[in-house]
Length: 206
Figure 1: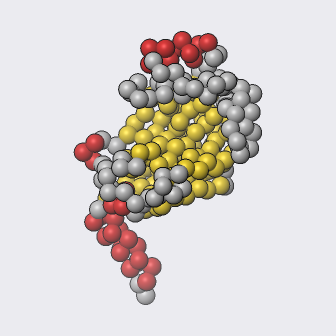
Figure 2: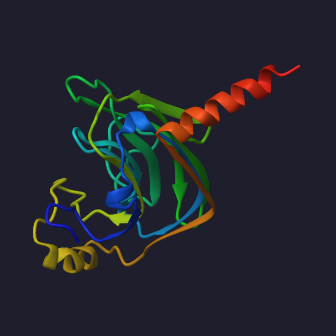
């Protein structure tokens, strides 16, 4: 748990000393995720922070009532996979895009690419992207961040000591994500530009 969190977190993230401005990083993250979750569960499977602007990307697997989703019905066992992105880098306004749906036991593949502040999320043949200018230390997290959020009111449980009780009362007894065929490439600062030049030259060699 974290002081301002919204549920139990089981995540991996870039170490603090390895974080850089989003303009200095190239990242390519891919995985196949199998979802084994109780109806009514809402889980964050990956996030991206541009620290000066907060969370700029969230990828959810959610059995909640959400506008604009392919299903959008709460508690029926059909999980919407959707991404929330910062749409306007100046105002910080956010937008949601529905990518697809799964039921418990299903798997889907997704990818996240970051190039000098351009961030794109791809899944189910759909994509969503944003451009972020931020000089603070940025980082990505992934895993299973099960939200302690009421289907009826939309409110989050504030006391971390009450998370377990909330999940039990909501009938959320299972929240298991299996990441398979996971690959992660990360290049920062001058290494990235050297790689780009090598790629460009290789394509133009006679």
